[in-house]
Length: 157
Image 1: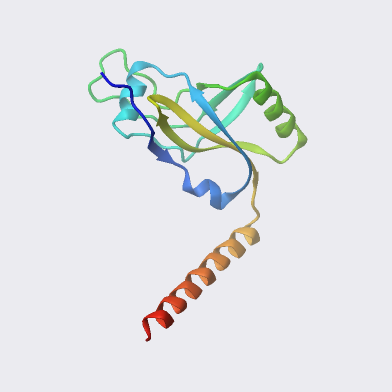
Image 2: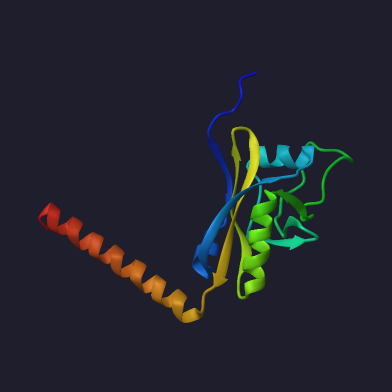
């Protein structure tokens, strides 16, 4: 059987970029059971309430929902269990330092398969205030209106 190539996106947390200022992004492997991998390959996962934390020098992913595999039997997994993240020791030490600095959290951005291995993209993020969210929304809206105006002008309307 040929080895998988490329990147296959399973789940994405779009709301994270709206709710947080993203400072740094890390790619981490996941420790999964067999039925979790099969459920992910079927494209089922949700990162909505997910977060990562460091405990006893290990990184853990919590709150991510990977539904039970429909064809699984008694060997099925718990949908919201904590999953271990695979990071280098230097990366974990850096994350510990940054999160202890204050006002930062670890948020999962996307869950995907890269060359056949399950990976998660976690971000070191700071929470946005409501006025920041409104400002970003208005900027995006004004950019969209400018693009529409340019398109109309180029068409000759």
